Length: 394
Image (cartoon, rainbow, N blue to C red):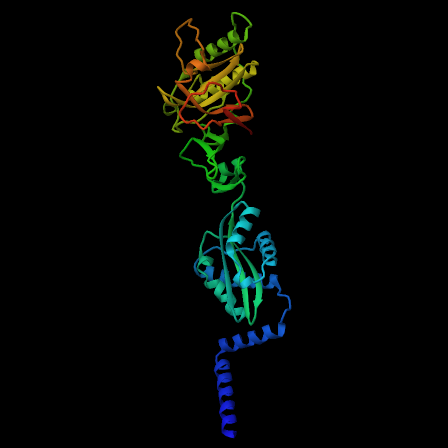
């Protein structure tokens, strides 16, 4: 019996010696005893968060990566999520992702993990060694620490939140932003394509367009509706009568006479740049978008409803033209015609030009209109009908 007791004591001393002869193992044992003593004592989440950031950022500094920062809002959301879980050590992360993306539509970059370790230091080291913690695309780290028996655990979330889309900031700084689709209310990332002078923003989820942006000759993007400026023709217009159709034709003729058609590449290295109506008039030339904007703006200023249509012409390809309502009818007004001296242009009724002109978007002051009928590369019998067009105020 004495021999057995001695062997047991030797075994105990051997185990104790094994654990305490090494500093790291000793710290692990000490941490286990601290956890036993702490029991259900509430964890200081702020202290753990700061310690986690220090450990992870020390590792990122070795890799010449920018330091992560705290994101208090995601930290609070993570705490609320944790309160709904029975076992944090086995928490499913997909519901967490869904919760964060719903609450923070700009959180386009997210990664999360659950880590467990007997000691605080081991847990923080595991965080620093997490592969995603060394990814340069992330900007913030949020943690939720918990106890799981004799172990410490945490749920860690790496994130990068995009700012909401701001056209002025996008022009000035570039970069990526998030936008919430006005149709389906889902958020998605966007970035201005500097190589494209006309950008139609469409939702990747519902596939519906919701905005048209266009660059001016200086390369500054504006909303298409911002190119209307209430321009009035600075020359007298003398229609044969005050009938709306005669006034419409007289204004149209004045624009055609004053402005020559010129493809963008002849006057600018910014192909397909859009110009304000006042600039098109002062230049005396412009392409189809420029002259259509000028004509529609002048007609609206004269009290005649007009819109710019952007789409396709079966003879020209991608094209822009003007449509107007006058005398109880809708008219297609081609703004790139060349008139002979004394010649008057002849408007084409929308119904008669439906095969040749195939609109996709309509633009007027303060409003954009997008096709609802689902037809692509097709004419439209009515440029004002809500059966064919959805409207978004700008």
